[in-house]
Length: 269
Image 1: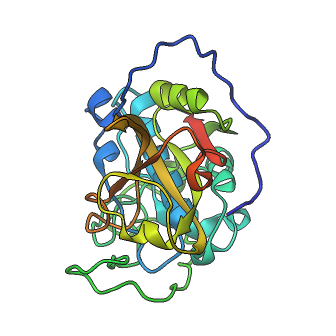
Image 2: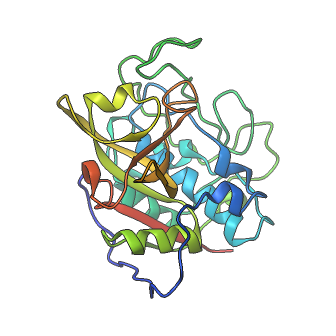
């Protein structure tokens, strides 16, 4: 996952009194995207999902609910060449940079027929049993198509949403919390170990098993559970995995590197 970094790192004046817990779904209830869990399918597109999810949230938050869209992970996955290797992995920082330079169109979940470019890779079960087929080897990266699906009436270029700026976050708990509190969810990357795959409830801390690789996710907020501080995180492995698609991970100690590679940005409205 260790890829290029954005030139800018944003630092907040930490004079804001932050609450003990923060859940953006309660703070901005008019933003439906905050409660959505997506599914990347059999494709290493987590880097595109973490970005598309957080960008969707931020467009809604910054427009105070006036602009509510699902940003297309498909558009980002298939068209951002500098982002890395498509379904074989990519770089969160480049994804946010691409949003500021090239813009991203809308696009809903697989089979939803929503937006300009909905996701084309079917959902699957990630390390759990469920109603969907188990995820298999990585699929081919979808083709970049500068056109919306036929049933969508807006032209591709008119459907683009742009970022005003993208930036890194410092590996500092207070700074990250202030960013979440002020601006909404961020994208983070961390190392997945074997014991993470089995997560169901509680605050995850790596205990056993070997490292499997990097994974990118959307961080929503924070809290404490029986005295243990955590980040509240949305995964992109559908709602059958984890705690209905979410997980909590230890906060403040750079658990599995989660605090050392966070990126975010501000939409151009």
